[in-house]
Image (cartoon, rainbow, N blue to C red; front, side):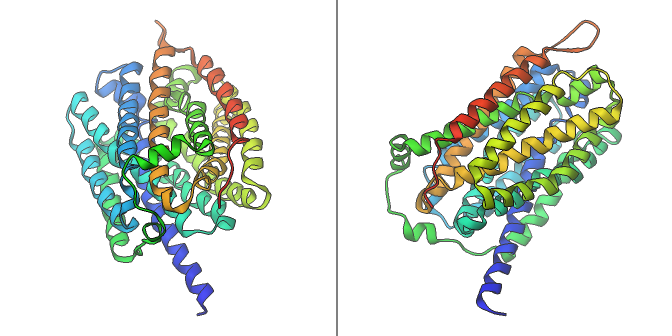
Length: 401
């Protein structure tokens, strides 16, 4: 085997492990979305309380992502990955054994503390280990974990929640994560080049650098607005489909199954097109295209199921299609020596935007006396405006690699 083939195989193994880590922590986050009707019933909560559950994870990820940005570039990437992943596993197990809304809320907060930094670290490792000319495709592959979670994890987790109890999806995530942890410990390479190339600085040096670097500020603003453009809508899709479109609770899993099956192909393909034709160009195209399914899904009346599935699947294709080139742009906007810290800081912004979006959605949306969701169209309008703003912001973000 020649040297180039060997390095490509090592790169593929590394990306596979990162995708597996991404799969588990993304599944831990997105499994909450279809569980909305289930949790409202078994925990006796409403949409506002559910939005707090989602916001607790995101807010925690934002706070600890911010704190982690001070120190994460000081450690071997493998060491950081394993330690954070162990913390994530313990927190997810806490979600599985929680017996009340209050304990579940605490466990979600702890899971967010580790899961948010993990997401940032995964993208930082992609930025470190994969050359810029292949980074869009690599980002698409790792981000396809969202699709894999939708295809396998969400339907299975939802089935377990409905047929057994709501604790079982979190036991499932814990079990899968333990397997991934063992594989990562045995095979993941040591990555220290960011330490060798980075100058030692005090923890607040990175923050000073970010706020004196216009390009990085644009990248952070892109992340913030893009999250508003998605997370104002996604947490309430399942409840809207049940109460307004006429879905049965056990049919919700098919929304994520079909969306995941589609995006597992489209996300890597869009990443590859972003490498070929430019990440900014692909983000602009997918961002503008995504407005159509956003407005459709938030104004959908009671229609035949196949029409509803076409709308929801196109929504997830567009959502993933704009996120892949956007994250590739953000990853490439910072130098390697500060990439881990910046991506952790970016994750903090991302998660805080998620928390803000969830709380905002919970304040705007309501349930009528006849048990219908009201005000979902307003969230669609907010998401569409935020999408247009994000396209404008993307024009300002420059690659430094």
